[in-house]
Length: 114
Image 1 (cartoon, rainbow, N blue to C red):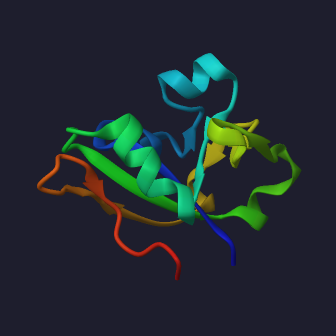
Image 2: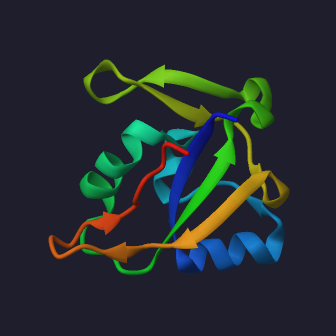
């Protein structure tokens, strides 16, 4: 299983759980796809976009299960990031967990290589 990751607020996660579908956060909706990160990208994403936020949840998903609407496209520094061009279904989430902030104010994701 090749895992990809989505960081979202607890409120977004609660709404996702209630509705069973996630069309995206504000930035996802503006860009036209749901942003994800690979294991080697997720901590940098947390530092760049979520520093200082103590209301976050990390979702883990099996990239292969998302089908052909998951497209790996160049982003920062030319790295390929996974983008999903459709809403995400709740049953596609493999795992979730709340994140804590490190002493530097950056959400700590831990080891995502497993």
